[in-house]
Image (cartoon, rainbow, N blue to C red; front, top):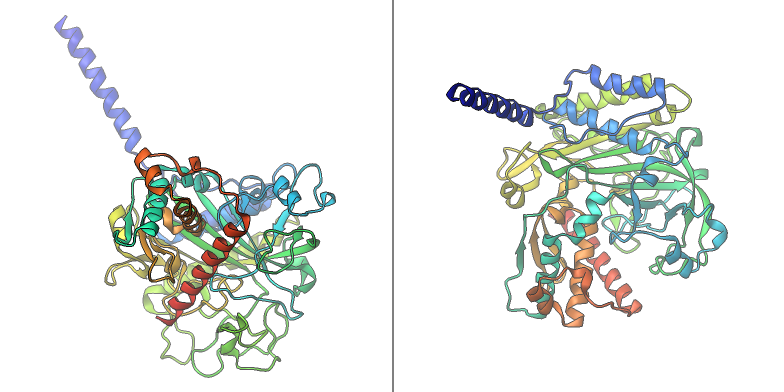
Length: 512
């Protein structure tokens, strides 16, 4: 009996040990340069590409470059019914995270003839960048934007932390004596949560439409009430020119941020002294070397017109999003960033070399601008209290990768030393940012999405207006249970105020 018991115990211990080893084992990933080549080669050969395995822990620079390309190629690949993954696997939303739906647009005047087989085409109505800049082509055609998110992002809007943040903010709005700070860290976006933003321009405006991904979209009129009236919307052929990606991966709750540009948009900076660009070419979509004006002003916002101070002079100020020695006469990357800059350049050259199949070669005309992330497996409190936009090892800096990262189609006038995705998308942000009497500091993994940030501001303001915030907190109810607020004009006014507050904050950040 004792022998039998010992055998059972030994078996149990052995089984437990094996289970423990299995559960602790981390998935591995090739860190050699051939891994990216195999991603490109497989896609070129099979016309199919798998999604990134976001449960794999990314912990070296090359892995982030490889991941960025694979995620981009998967999101833009076609599904079986010839619809891009980003339109089928993700939901198109407005800038408050509200899904864009057919019935809603019909009520706002969208012609039924624009809807085929009960499917909503791409909707393009957003036309301002983070700081309010309106970017246009040489023929004054506005660049438009679409936002897409999966359930990993959107379902967290109904989480306990989301409700707590909204309810606390509403109570603070009602009672100025309350402490104007909120900290919630129990809920995080799950691994695989993805949000993207895409820049588009009329196909007739690009230098070579055979080198851009083109799609027919519903384009609304550009005015402050664009989201309420679709009577004058038009069907237009549009070309993709910029692509932002935010995805939460294993041990990176802050998310990995990557951005891509179409190659023929604008030249790179060639000097930090004198004329920043030596190109005189007009073979760019957003740059004309022969146009009049100071080139440096091509990426500086005119606060009156909310356009670049000089038209047709857009350029990439920090190629590969890395840091440069601005005292040198040329474009010398600082020592710490040279290897990463080389990785990005090599990946872009490899894409051009390998993606030659007629069905996938269009993507060889896009380039990885850069990626940024924080320390692997950083304690959540470090991310909440640190400075995600600053390099790791500098004060309370937390980040690695492209530390001067910007997309020329979405952050045209937000290109400056030390600026990157985390400058605005951190876990430490303010609601009601430009109103000193209302400003509320929020520290939470959820707040690094502008979708949730604006959603929370709107919900909190509506709760405060209804005077139900405290009741909701006491009951512990989800904010979705609040009574419907039907004053559309008031809601739209709140949305516009929130949008402008966000833009003003971005402009203020550039002054620092």
